[in-house]
Length: 321
Image 1 (cartoon, rainbow, N blue to C red):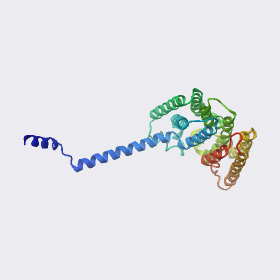
Image 2: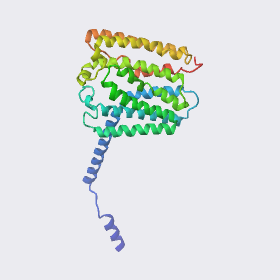
Image 3: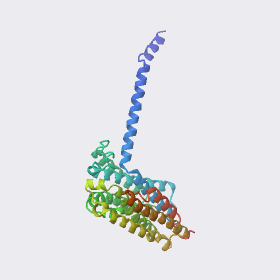
Image 4: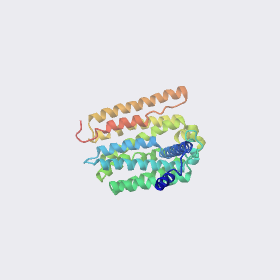
């Protein structure tokens, strides 16, 4: 009897009311919501749209590499390259926070809007940079990890901190960083450099300037306000559209190099010609709209280019088709 009373007293000594339970659930929901918002802010630092194209071209380099790559190594390679691309984007946003605050297109980014502090962005960028390089080195080889580290350095220091604010040709030179992904994945798979990844590098390298210039024509007032010497600000829209046309024309023979060197078959050449025609038609449409609206559409979007690039490069294999 005494034991029964003691047990009852012990078990019922701290009652939980429905009000307290509801308040606890509400607090947890708020905390979860804040965590999700915070995670989205950090994800935005990585420039997901740019990262998607880097990942896509890295997959192409990995798929086309000779030999067998285990699924674990392949997945680890793509994840590390994606993290490295995101790290470079975060460090770019950290350094460019001052000009991002002046441009309409970028004022809502995490740092200018105050959602992420510059110190937090810098720490996040450095941590993810180290993680991607060390991870790739551990999963594959030191050559691939070294090239990834150099690519991050080139994008952040050479392009972002130096070229972007000093020359209208910054995107031409800095585009090398964005074009390196298929080379990194190829070296990760094979441990050596080959002709094929260099040709893929050239395709992305020559595609980058006309794509960026088409976008910057729409945002020239933003760049002028921020003091960034992009080609439309320095040379005007006529010279910029001429350069877009020149690079679009040059992209055709560059894109056909895998076929000309015997790395790809006729299917690659056919898809490449179709993709080049689309890009050229986009340029002509750009000229018409410039005359009517003083505004330039985006031309060959990253997603459209990525699909054409992947479909074309899928047959970039000796003896295929």
